Length: 376
Image (spheres, helix red, strand yellow):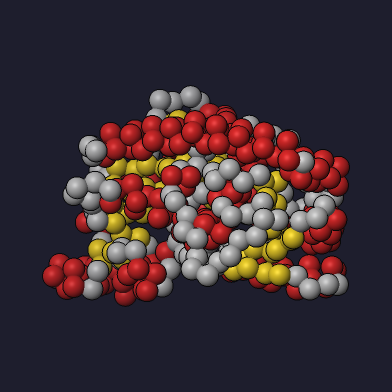
């Protein structure tokens, strides 16, 4: 039994990472079983993906009582497992460990990793963003976390350096890109793509994880962005990548003062399929950017952490990163994508980068299989 940690259906990027993990392991002849914490989603979500439910690790509580008292046949009947059933842990938190989240998540994960290693489980942190780690409490937790993992994959150079700054270079700390590009999207039934659709993807984190000035200017800048898209002859549609971002639609609509089309898709695979039909994408959601770029769709990043600029660096387009209020970069990028010659060059470049990045993802999975002693 493998515990899939740090993913869930609360966020379509997190859900897509869970799908990527399951696709990799279930492609083999005798795939392992997977369990997730109850926080993954509701019961139907876990059943949909064929996942067992991990009973809580807390010392006391009803779920702990069930773990201790219930016979194994009862747990099996209802799809429940306890930590003794788990032999390995794969964490795909995306971006949870660093100053912007406070020391709490890093300390909690450090405690988990220390306990799992005492239980002789293999612990692997799949590619994700890390850091920075500046306070003494979070740096101490980071050291404990890394020391109790068998493999740690930083998603890009800056995250890798943030880890090295705390623990130094270690052979089990490596770099690998986001691993969702290998997952194929599905075009929803009835979806009729148009040639000039540009998706604008908002993100609530741009309001609650940024400084006050950026947060206050974010929605007006998105409204200005939509107007600029229309001015360049493209059709702007707001794409909701995660349900909480719906709350941003009305404020954007109010500033624009004209009707806006909004698209929302609950399935991550169909969401990726829709992104693949776009003319271009402007996104504050990380995995909406990955979904576009991995399918050769030009994208502009408007993000709240270093993971956005690093992603665009990986795809060889560091110039396609804008900050709130950065009209110059927005204008230059729009001019480039509507020019047929430069647009063709951008798409060809993205397709070349995708071949390289997919090879690196396959190398990452090979390393993971080696630690878990799984063969293809």
